[in-house]
Amino acid sequence: MQAEALLRHGADVLLVTSDQHPESDAARDYELVLDPRFRTAATWLPTLKAWRRVRRFRPDIVIAELVRDPRWIALAGRAPRIQVVHDDRPHDPDELTPAYERAVFDRWAARSAATITYSDYVAAAVTARRDVAGTPVHVVPLASDLDLDRVPSFVGPERRRDFVMFGRLNPYKNVDVVLAAWQRHVVGGGWRGDNLVLVGDGPLDAEALPKHTLWRNGSFRYADVIPTLAAAKGSLAHYRRASQSGVQSLSMQLGVMPIVSTAGALPEYQPPGLAPIGVDDVAGLAAAFDLLADPVTAARLGADAARHYAHRCAVDLVAVRILDVIAQVLDRRR
Image 1 (cartoon, helix red, strand yellow):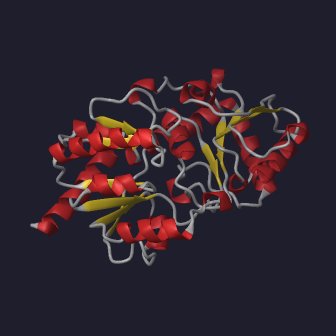
Image 2 (image 1 turned 90 degrees about the vertical axis):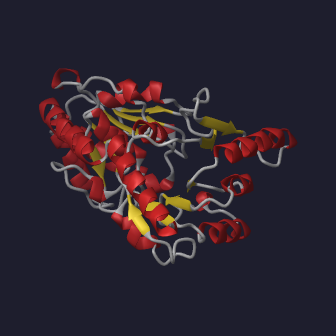
Image 3 (image 1 turned 90 degrees about the horizontal axis):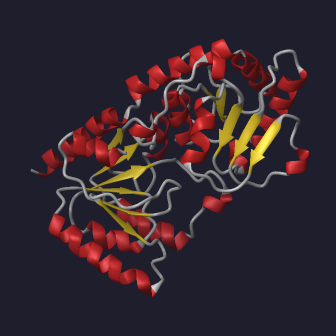
């Protein structure tokens, strides 16, 4: 979505990416999609063709995001480069990369002309990191990656139901605390007949889930979850570690109040109306369920969240900010 917003604002864009996003579909006119299995011989001819197209395109600047494939180093060439850093550290051990990979890619990243992060928190945390130190660091809002023409109409109180938690249900997502709070909500006086809907795979025990919890295990596409999320009373991004969270931004875009912790998703993104809740505060999280269980309150706070997103995180605002960073980098090169 950022590429299309940049195009709308007058930039010429060539996007080189892989097909690892759950919403990957046919390549757009401005997009080259490469198979991520670079050790497979069949991927090298398409890579060579991509390299030739990039050279013909002759970019003034390259924006590198989540690069862990040596082909992308070659594709980037010698143009000035802006790196995008999402998080300050891995969330879980399974996100760690081998030391030799970090050495190669961190050395390459350290030669960037600038660094973009999506939050003040991450900007402050990575300033001294070896792949960032010495580069100017800029903060850009985090937009949802949902196509604008797929955003449904705002859902009013009469159709609000359930709470939703979606994505890979990794340990840092704090699922145990969420489930304990949900159980307290269900047996308390605030429950209004809703379900807690978990969407995504993860190391959960289906037999141990509290009552009124539904788990849609496995991979999913936005088409599978958007109708459920848009009608939800609240969405869960109550994580144990800070994370730039697509769940948080997508929820706000759809008019659903996210429930976040004081650690993450990103408290600085949280709309007014529902303050971040302590990571282990089961009672506080249950109270948030009680508050949002009222459909009128859920719709009102959801509308506040949508306005907050539009004023702060809309993708065209992101494009303007990225173009400003690009202009600063190019000005320094003149």
